[in-house]
Length: 330
Ligand SMILES: Cc1cc2nc3c(=O)[nH]c(=O)nc-3n(C[C@H](O)[C@H](O)[C@H](O)COP(=O)(O)O)c2cc1C
Image 1 (spheres, rainbow, N blue to C red):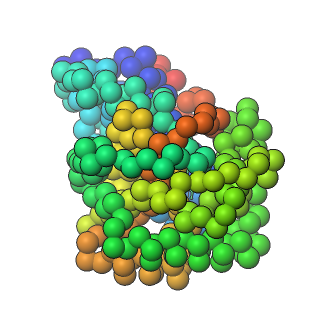
Image 2: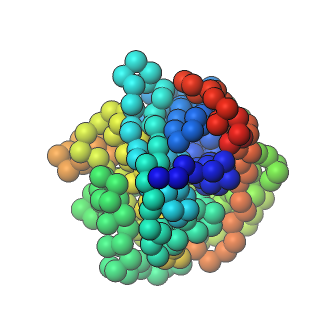
Image 3: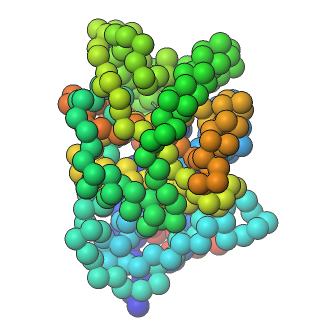
């Protein structure tokens, strides 16, 4: 077996940091030692008001792990992923090793290519249904990673009511608003946070979806949003840190599959960030599974500004055994 070169690992890390994260906080750190890549939670980048238990931050890291694995596979290496490999180190979220040659498939290429095209789309979608064939592709992407994607059906109105309720609670919470303000309406060149240019226009009527106030651009004229977006929730069998990571991997595979099918996506995380609405959501999906994130899916028709990323060198730190191989990979 040949080990990946520092160029291969560098490429895989460049893919990893393209993962989505709440307010583009990028709450991850990596350490490379030979064939081992450690993925760690960066506690300094967890949103302490919106995400005090770091559920969403762990999901973002799970998404980074998925990108890492897709990139290694597309470069001909078989990744082996161990989630939470050390019970004594809860912030060591994953250990990714490559332990064999991989025959690159067409699917590997499609997913790898989508990593650099995927974006959160906060603008109106067309009133055009996502066909059953594409929905099936998205649900199978989630199952592939050991989770489920539930397209909302009978729960639709209850969930959208919870989104609005949570949005209302957060709009009246000074600590939440201050945290949001720190990470949004940034300059386009900012290496983290959400630039003003990635925000959406204010809806011109009380639509079914509620975009976060901080993700609306007051400078844009009001626009009509789609009447009834496709909403889908990522579910896992259990709750807990490993489930957050698996949900993040599944969410990312869904987003990559969506990108490759020209389906745009944005998130509606408000009800996960308010204790009372989260409790209702959890109840609503019991016993189907534990809910992690709510996605709005559809066909966008206007260009969206790209969010920035910190360079890989900034998120590489010493791991358990900082060796020469790691320094070479930097
Ligand atoms: C777990 C999670 C929750 C998110 N929640 C929201 C949200 O509620 N509203 C929103 O507009 N974006 C949300 N986002 C999207 C991030 O803001 C976005 O990923 C980040 O700004 C990077 O931009 P990109 O996705 O275009 O690369 C979320 C992302 C993740 C991973």
